[in-house]
Image 1 (cartoon, helix red, strand yellow):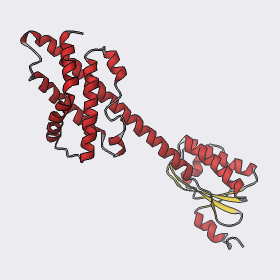
Image 2 (cartoon, one colour; image 1 turned 60 degrees about the vertical axis):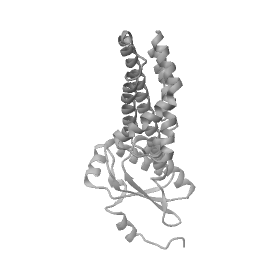
Image 3 (tube, one colour; image 1 turned 45 degrees about the vertical axis):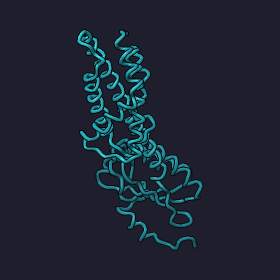
Amino acid sequence: MGQLNEIVSRYLQDNQTDITNELLPQTLNELNIKFSEKDLIHHYEMLRSLLDRVSESLLTSKEATVENETGYDISNYFFDKGVLLKHTINVLCVFRLSLLKHLRQSDLFEDSQIHEGFLILEEIMFAFDVAIRTTTQNFNDKAQKNKEVMEYEYDEISAPVVVIDKSRAVLPLIGNFTPRRLQNLIENTLDQVSSKSVNTIIVDFSGIATFDTFVAKHLFDLIDSLKLIGTKTIITGVHPSMALTAVHLGVDLSKIESYGQLRQFLSKNSKPMYK
């Protein structure tokens, strides 16, 4: 690394607070963004930290720059507040351009150092690009993790066995079924049927969004498993297209008691709860 790299690196280190205080308000004004005082404090802190990493990047290799970059919103402050990723990236992009302009207008670069100065500006842009890519990846990873947690929690509560009297219960099937949700459905249903001493369970198909052969196979496997543990299964809400899918799978629906709608079964087989 050349002497000019060291000069600019030291300049960014020594003046990171003044630079941030000067350029962040300009950045927000250009973007027409207003932040709360707490949000501004976080931006000031994160930009000073980023300038610190940028200054270090001028003294190291590109590989080291990539390896050492942690991302802008490392604490997920803005992510947890629901701030859109594009707003954070816009701040970084405009701040980067303002920083380059600030450096060009400084007395750091003499005429004889113009070429070297351009190289340094390219290195600074590279460091900001790495920060932007890492920030985007962190955001996407966090969003995916949150999605998976929500799906898991939804799967856990979305297939309740609803007891309607001392020996009977209803299993309403609602929405789309992923492989994981199907697995949870089968395990939870068998556990609840056993723990609640259910002798008859009514599986209502009317709320299923997509009933393909994959979903159908697992649901009829569940019915077979219920039979094996001595639980009678009745199905309701099976549409003609569902019946056709079941036939293609070789399922003999004539051996399963069925009703067009759940209410038809309940009206025909109603009895006082917990006699």
